[in-house]
Length: 224
Image 1 (cartoon, rainbow, N blue to C red):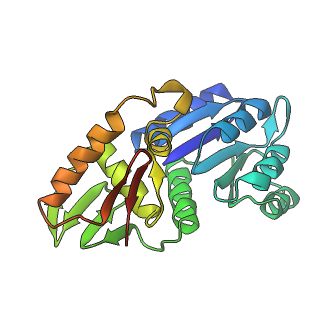
Image 2: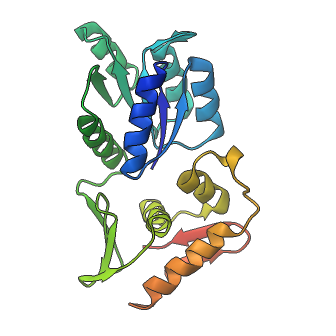
């Protein structure tokens, strides 16, 4: 999942970044309101960790702006403000959760996973499609209880397509979502196709995957 960390404390931002990257997220840091809004407008993030006390404005302003155009992004407010009025205001403006500093990184990870899970509409820590079972937190895939060895990128692609089943996902969307900032990668290269081809080969060893569709000159779709 693609996470934007909006935090002006650079030491804390790096600490959160390193921790979340180590547990499997793709992360980007913004240190102020302007950079945060530019990132959200340029890239497709699953979640934003939003500090309120930013140098060029209030995090609530960022939250209000984001909610006008990005209804699906999960927003967890991270702040030293623990007052009840601030928490209520944040939730009214569209925050999905609220975590007061200082906080444990393990709690942040658990809350982040729970919020993203809820927004995507699944209530357990696994997904299933055509006999394949994806264990989201363990990055494991199996078919009829037989483990399938996937690379991290193959798992991420499979998971993202399953979460968006019956929708065409473009190569650019996959590039942005799996590798992070689209401005930092060559979206004309064929590395997405290579990873998808390898993923298909591994899945096809277990059952026919005619439901895993290539949409010519656009991208891919998994049909339920």
